[in-house]
Amino acid sequence: MKNVFITGVGQGIGKALAQKYISEGFYVIGTTISGSSDYKHNNLKIIKLDLRDSESINLCEQNVRETGRNIDVFINNAGILVDDNQSVVIIDKLRTTLEVNLIGTIDINERLIDMISQNGQIIFISSSAGSISRTGDAAAHSPNKYPAYKISKCAINMYMKTLSLREKDKFINSIHPGRVRTDLSGFDGDMSPEEAASEIYKFVSSNNETGYFWFEGGKMDW
Image (cartoon, rainbow, N blue to C red; front, top):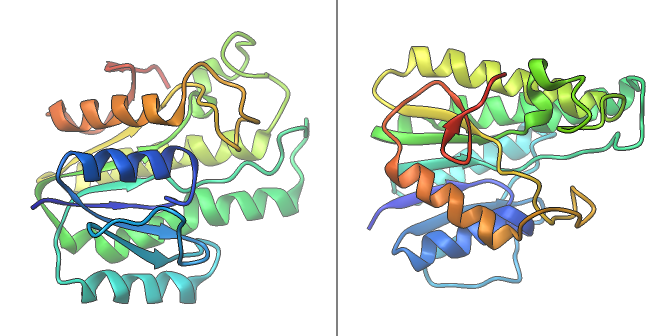
């Protein structure tokens, strides 16, 4: 049985990904801030993880290692958007956003990188909001809103790229899932979390390239 580690499985895309991977025969190690989930399954282990808290990250690493399972697929799904209606950078909100979307995410990856199988997949759920070339495109994203979120997604794409150059025995990529009806998007979107999870699963299962930003199976300009 293959194993997948997914952060942020309490709701939205993360929960749908956990359900999808279980339906495909995977064992899922998932994280939530509370350490619990309303979704239960014999092939699902929930571990507490708060990406803002270094001690929580440390305990999560220990708990993952105690499972004795290697990781075939690592999906960095957990993320926050706290400056949705802001048009300028609010420093406190920027710090909070970067702690979760960037620094904590990088921390847990660096701690668990040795547990990822050769030819394993590391996926970062990013956003077209992190594309510099699309920043002023009103058709893609609100040009004057949520700067902290945009900064965080741009930065995590760069971490993905540098990691892909370092870890050449793995497939490491970022994915823009599209506009999905989740709490983060205000439940306004073009697809359900289940539809997004299915597309992500399809991409991960068929991908044999590394170091790119993807959307709908194609490489995205960023």
